[in-house]
Image (tube, rainbow, N blue to C red; front, side, top):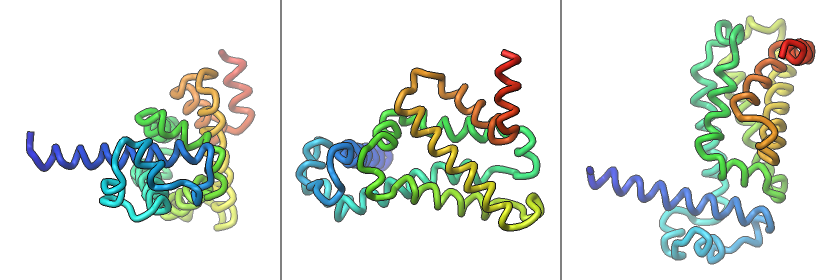
Length: 199
C-alpha cells in the first residue's frame, strides 16, 4: 500500500474519532463546557493529537457541518431538476444512503440534546436550501416566493423526518423511509393515502 494513502486513512480515522467524541459529549453538555481533555479521552487520542488537527471544539463542529453539507451537496449537484423531479425516489435514496454509511454518527448527531444550542441542524438546513436554489431552474416555479416556500417546506420536513426516524429506526427500514418521503414530497398527502390503500 502507498504510504501516503495509509497516512491519509489514519488521519481520516483520527479526525472521525474526534468528531464522534464531540457529538457524543454534546448529548450531555453544552459545547462551551466540553474540554479538549474530555474529547481526547473519548476519542482515544492525546491532547497534542487533537491540536494537530483542530484549534477548538468549535472548529470540530464547523468541520462536521461542512462535511455533512458537502456530502448532501454532492447528491444535490447531480440533480436534473426538470427530469429527476418526475421520478425523484433516487434523490431520497441517495440522501438516506449517506446516513446509512455512518449510521451511528448521524444517530448521535440527530439525537443530541444539545445540538439545538449550537443550531447545527438549522445551519445545515439553511446551507442545503441555498444549494438547492443554486441548482434550480427558475422556470420550474411561477415565482421566487413559490420556489423558496417549496424548498423550505421540503427541507424542513426532510430534516425532521430524519431526526424522528433516527430516534427509533426499527419502525421502518431506511430504504422504505426514502420511498415514503419521496411520495409525500412529490404527491402530497393524497399520494401517501393512495399508497397505503394499495398495499
